[in-house]
Amino acid sequence: QVQLVESGGGLVQAGDSLRLSCAASGRTFNNYPMGWFRQAPGKEREFVATISSSGGNTYYLDSVKGRFTISRDNAKNTVYLQMNSLNSGDTAVYYCAAQTRRGNYWYASLYDYWGQGTQVTVSS
Image (cartoon, rainbow, N blue to C red; front, top):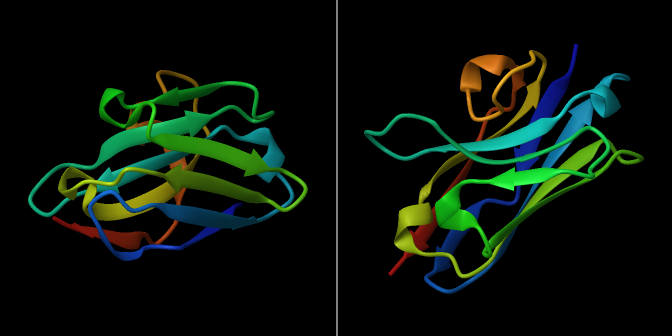
């Protein structure tokens, strides 16, 4: 069992930066690839970024490549999402999740553990 708690969201202006954190409880955190997803009003939840269990591999949604960076500190049971050059298209509730099933990392159905989400609002 893994419990996830996100923090770091807020209201910012276009061009600003934010760093989201996701604190995990549970001894098996280090075993799971971790992902960040987001859901904007009226839209489906979409994959944003993922990081392997060791932190050695990362993958991103095309629209955030070069602006967002996912990282993890397994000693602190925490995964981060550094978001730079934010724009209004990034406005959404951001969720972290633990991937417990094998498969293509962009499928939300492969993630069994989810946080409650943190709101990111970017004003233009």
